[in-house]
Length: 114
Image 1 (spheres, rainbow, N blue to C red):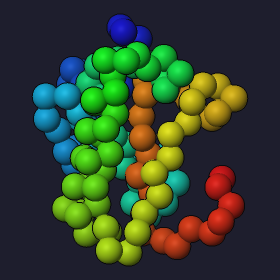
Image 2 (cartoon, rainbow, N blue to C red):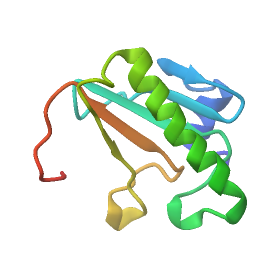
Image 3 (cartoon, rainbow, N blue to C red):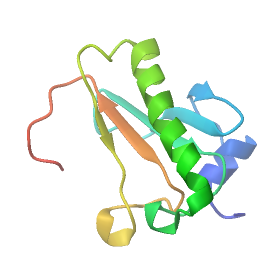
């Protein structure tokens, strides 16, 4: 997707502060954090949202959750806990139309999801 911000980050056309990368997944700090720690985890394959996921994407989604756990361990917030948020579509609050998982940590979250 030529106009996708996250695809441009994957290609190195837009800089990011990476915390993890392999052949299928990239994770980097959000430039407008909603918590003291706010990391985005994305598949390198362009998937618009969870609603656009196909059967063949199931493995990468599972792997993303394993990577999230690894990032939490490596970055030192696994023990204290964290929140994982996935927005889906405009009404779900998704602003970049490339599937991404928000890892939020570094503070205690209440029951209300903002």
